[in-house]
Image (cartoon, rainbow, N blue to C red; front, side):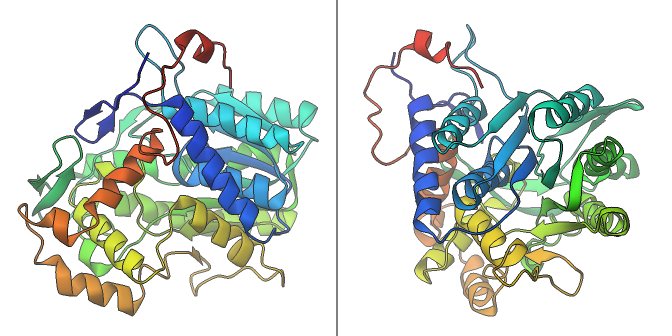
Length: 397
């Protein structure tokens, strides 16, 4: 069978497994071409099948020679379809690691479920050497179930309603969008899903089980952004959740430093096209313009370049000194927030309209980046070659 992309708004309804494999190989090749770095050797990644989590796994394995455990909630092929891109990313990432003599264990399930924590801890104790020296928190989801109920996040403002434009990838149109003000309950629910509670739960459980190594580090990915996007991001419901995440980082840092000589950091990344970011209201024109400006300046990075720079220059630099800002955060959004980049965006942003956005932004690059996340638009892949579903069904993560 031939697999063609199926989009519904900004949701990909299918993926192209050989394309996913080829894109992973291209990212691994990029890391292989860079200088190796001395990093953690036993790593747990929560949210490992896409975006920054997947890029971290590839960078640490290929560039740092790390064994990894990945936890993600993905679906395989069935009568309903080919399955999710993350399912195949898990499989092909494991194969890439095993080719290098490394471990890449996959756990597919809900990372918010305490039973999943117990499974992972049991594996670490019995089959992974007993300890991990880096834990990465990179979960992106819209809901979380806890003992006290199920929480649903919202993407709203917290001050006043705002109006702007968002890119619809299916129709390739720039559409007007209004963002309403969240109530107190919605802010709390979003913080429960996107804040630091579950990060803390994992670290506490791992520490109590004595599977965190001496001097263990843990990082959680975040975003701050410029003043232009502050209303929806910094000051919106997602921003409140990220503030909670950053506060959790400080608390966990104190806890780990006291007990294990370890550290916890929030890592602030640049704006990129991920499966999560395309959902955020009125952010997409900014990201598409950011792509245009940073490519013109020759400083554009995707997740894999960001991950390599994070580990080789910030968390595990040759001199051993972790690079932190005044708030003890790792900042790999420095190029995005540079004066040169933001001045260029400010000069152009208000000229963007539904009639000209494809010409004035890197819309083509924005959409191609999204398609690659699902195995489409990957250079070198023959999309006219038939795919045998029975062979895909034999693959296991």
